[in-house]
Length: 247
Image 1 (cartoon, helix red, strand yellow):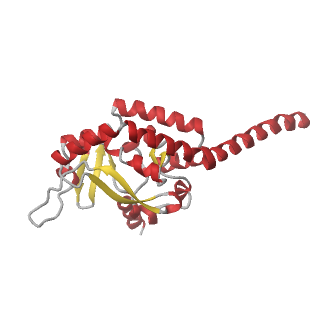
Image 2: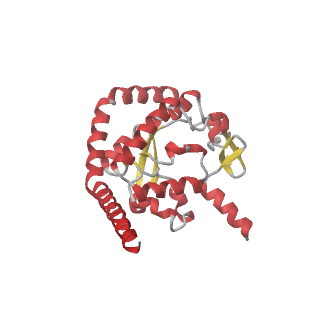
Image 3: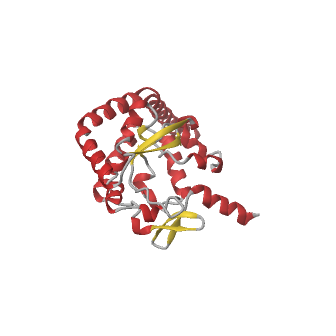
């Protein structure tokens, strides 16, 4: 009986090792060339759409057309992320920017719902800052608030879309997002990437799990999202508050 069990377990272990080896080969040698080719083709094919969106952003929201922000990438290397701007520069009497919910517009909300504001990140993929699929790049300010396990999300390039994005996107807790990010890092493969891209297409077409302007609120702690009775705040605000409560 013992010998039979050993014979059954051995093929499973060998299959698991072969699968892990294949995934490592894909991650190290195949994933980046695919990203490079697909981002270049997408930029060429979508160039008319990019020009039209850029013109409409300039007319409806002003300049600069491209929103730039520093984000941590692979191995926490900082890079500049590109997006089409989705908000105006409306300010109060003292010259300070108004809260996000007061600067949001119907046109900007449409860009966000359809994910068209993310298209400039194709240039980030072309440059090697990002990948088509991977954990989404978050704020630099969040870095001190990660646990050691959560930091593993930076073992791969951040993505234009990711596992967390097709499993809830804006309406997941930070713990849920990081669990899905690390699940992707552990199981990164060509098949999983294809599955995530397909689910992303369905989600974008269905405009699901994207925060509406009506759900964006502001209080003394900053801007947050309110959805079905749940509140979603910035990671640094949420964990700083929890830390203060423990003290």
